[in-house]
Amino acid sequence: MERKLLILSTLFVTCLLVSNIITVKIVDIAGITLPAAVFVFPLTFLITDTINEVWGKKVARDVVWLGFAMNLLMLLFLQLGRVLPPAPFWEHQEAYEAILGAVPRMVFASLAAYLVSQLHDVWSFNFWKKITDNKRLWLRNNLSTMSSQLIDTLIFITIAFIGTVPTETLIILMVNQYVIKVLLAIVDTPFIYLSVKWARPRKEEFVANG
Image 1 (spheres, rainbow, N blue to C red):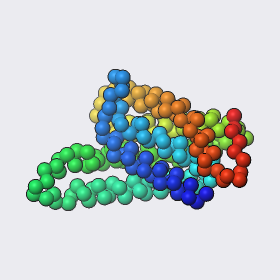
Image 2 (cartoon, rainbow, N blue to C red):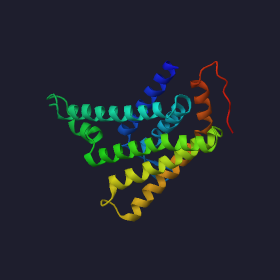
Image 3 (cartoon, rainbow, N blue to C red):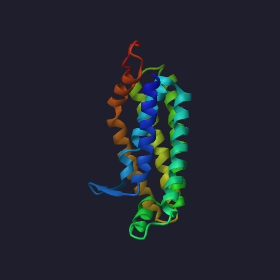
Image 4 (tube, rainbow, N blue to C red):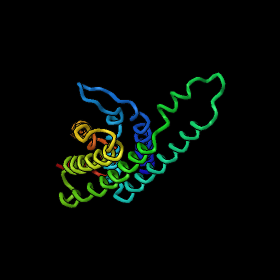
């Protein structure tokens, strides 16, 4: 059990850190403009829901706080890399700053959205777990993830862009991101069953709720 929890926690932190790095790249999918991170960050909700289901709310919350701490540490190290004097022959300081020198407002938006949405996800998953009497895992996973992704989208887009783009653009950004996140939440439904089945002790019978 400890080994599986370690694997999931490591995967959670990896997805979180990678998503915060690749979010600077804006991609165009079928005419919809999105940050690349929208395809990685949703995995963190799948992982916390798995941990929540198998190890409980306290452990899931601890993993969320661990991710927050590692995020701060990553930002500190990236800042250190930015301020260290470049070698005379190294000509990529501007590229480094453009990609990894996160603007403070974006950093704050990302951290605030992450912490609030992830802690809400942990709470929401347990709320629906009680409502469904520990049944319908697919429903608990989707309701908690979709509501948490909505919170994440609203907080991040608002803090990061309000006052810098027209209100109409702000709304479009929110809608585009949230629609993709909802679709990804639906797609990951089978994987929550596979993930929970893998994480549970072999001696415990896995019951496919719902």
